Structures are given as C-alpha cells and as structure tokens.
Length: 214
Image (cartoon, rainbow, N blue to C red; front, side, top):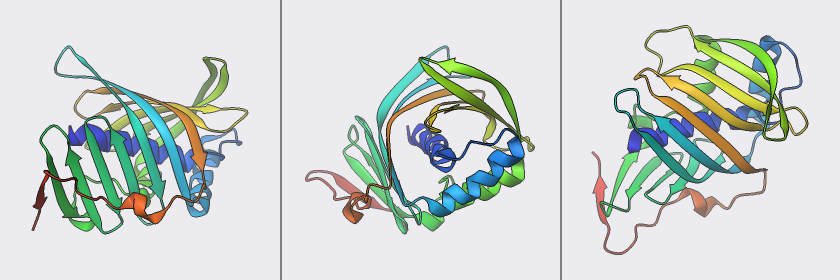
C-alpha cells in the first residue's frame, strides 16, 4: 500500500512541474520549462484516479483521492484507505485499516521522492521526446515520452498527456521496474491558492496507535 502511494506522488509531482510550461515543440524546450515551473510554483491541489496493472498478478488496483503540494517537501495525499503527510521535516503515514500512524524523518526515508530530488534525477537520468499529438476525451493533448537511461531507475518509461489550450497534465502513464503499468488521470487542478500551513501537519485521531521510527 505504501509503495503505491509513493508511485502516485512521483507522477503528481511531475505533473506540478509541467503545468503551464509545455509551449515549446522539442523535448529540450520542455525540459527547460521544468526548472522554471519548479521555481515559480507555490502550491498545488489536485484530484486523481489511478489504476495499477500488476506485473506479477493478473489484477488491477484502483485508487482515487486528493493531493496537496507546497514548497520545501511539503505535501498531503489522501485516499479512503491512507493519508500521507509531510511538513518538510517529518513524514506521517496513516493507515485507517490498521489504525496506525508511523512517524519518521523525511531525510531518513529512502523511498520518498522529493520535488527537488526528482527534478534533478529526471533531468540527468531520462531521455525525452515528443510523440504525435492526441485527443483525450475532448482535450487536444501534447504527448511527452520519457525513457530512463538507467536500468535500475524505478520509473522506466512514462508518457504525459498535456492539454494544448490549458497547458495542464491530464494523464500520466508509466511502467515501473517491477513490471507494473500505472495509469493516472488528473482533474480539478488548482494552482497557488494559498494552502494553509496546517494542511501539512497530521493530527493523530483518537484510538490510533503512533509508531515513531528511531
């Protein structure tokens, strides 16, 4: 469960970097926009729907929820089953089913994808190209293809669908190193709405066990 949520985080953070930036017609131009968007972004709110097609089992896992993102490694992700929150220093992972919340330091969490870390890794470890434009629903989209230059990179291949008119990423599809196929659709994207700081803190509900990792 925890791994799936981090997969969502990876793709949604990438979406945040690309919003409002894909006006150019070469992959190098798109990459140049990533840094500018990251520098300009204050906060983001987005709803998502995700499907994970397992590379091991003949099953499809569906998840939906909301995510909030701000500068300095701050984010909050919510589904019906799980909530993950970071204030930039501490990381809370709350499981409703287990009635437990684990608390760890962000700096110690090896599998956490930070916005700053991902931006650097993406630019250094992925080759990009533009695929033919397509229509997603009623939206004309630019398609950006990313292929990992390293065999051990978690995300091996990714395609982003970016609206020509609104310049928002409406969909992301990627294959991970474990052979899973992940498809994520985004909607109701809101940028720089002034999210309150308390949204990036987690208050443990009554009756929930707290586990503080050393």
